[in-house]
Length: 112
Length: 115
Image (cartoon, rainbow over all chains, first blue to last red; front, side, top):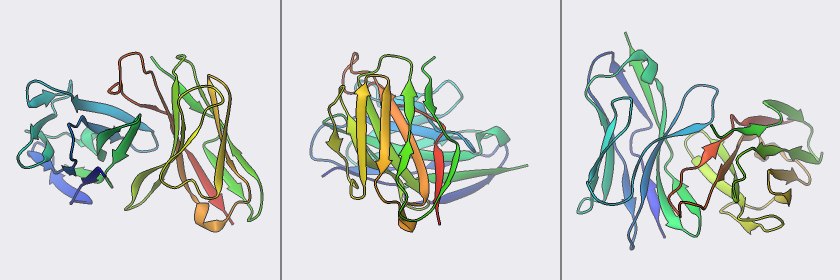
């Protein structure tokens, strides 16, 4: 069965510093991978997704994630974070059968 | 923009009550989902529906049921609420028009407290 592991429950960082949020998955078949973001008191929004092709995918707000098949990882990175990036970030894998499996989430805390 | 609306932002119910959580989407999406979100556990799928009157159990369906009489509406029912069902409930929808990889669109959640 597919699963997703987000090892870091919380990542504190100072504004303008780089950040990496880790995600590892397990799957015996081809996967489609996603990062969702949840801002305070809101539902989740799609941040970016990997379907096929280039292993580096980017979002419109400066985040990027790299699909690494050999390490079964899909880490999320941003070279310089803003206060407004404070949110919870969820990695997810498409298991087929119209279902997504989510990780347990990583809370990004950006301080001035 | 897709809009997924959950009827209540906060609910407080007593143990044993029957509870209805309502969700409506306005984009004619085929698939709808109910998740619960708990700290340290992430999102867990309760039930989903891929069409009107169709439903499938997710990973944690015990204690819940669902209803989808119309395409735009997907209801989650707690037949007899218990304190361990205190949680944040998130509804989501998705089109199948672009295949398995179309994104989920989430509502803002209903925070249910059972006392």
